[in-house]
Length: 290
Image (cartoon, rainbow, N blue to C red):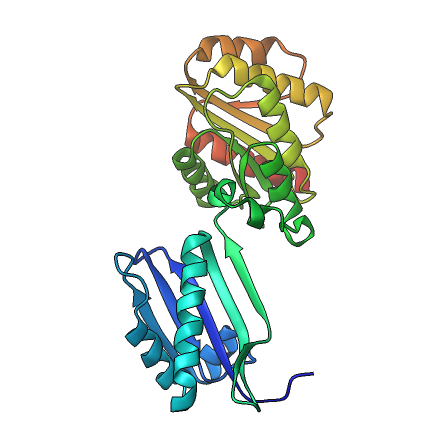
């Protein structure tokens, strides 16, 4: 049991818009930052840290005074903030939060609770961090995709997406929404996708019980449409897919890809354009609902 007098909120986050680390503090600790922002927005103080020089000692002291710390605690706060910044920077973190940071009755600053998030793409540099990964705290869909080398972000819709390329994936999700539907995920199968990789993508997408249709949209450059088509047919056969599947292929070996789909025994919905694919996927969900 720790006896303390006051509580402080402290966090560092990666502000992608300004391409800076943002230091956020408040003298109203012990509450969620959203609650503080709603009830007392003036209590939140922020500074943007210049990456070329990092957090400076004078900035740490300014933040300590802004949070109402007594002069005798400012040097402790400076040491703590500079250490937190070094940990954030050196471990490739995306978020660090200490809530609450308390002032004990003995006049010490003590972090009672802290959490950090890290850049998944940088974990190969930090084995000591990756070993602490708690998969029970992650979205199981994203965890399964990551274990299979797929780029996946779970969403709240009911149309599963299997796309190649992040830009095309974003455009496809926009087209689904434009057509009146909701995407269930962002999934980029990457370049050179083999049939087995396509099957893995189907497994990940169909692991979401909310998925009522699947849209496969491939613009092949490095990829090959015939490989993707083989993967789609294999997935439909091996996984016994029970939801409508819309396939739009374009690019390298597209004629062979269309031939494979046409000559297969699986039931598919094909589309020639992105707009048509989005409309057919939304229509397939509506038809299933009726």
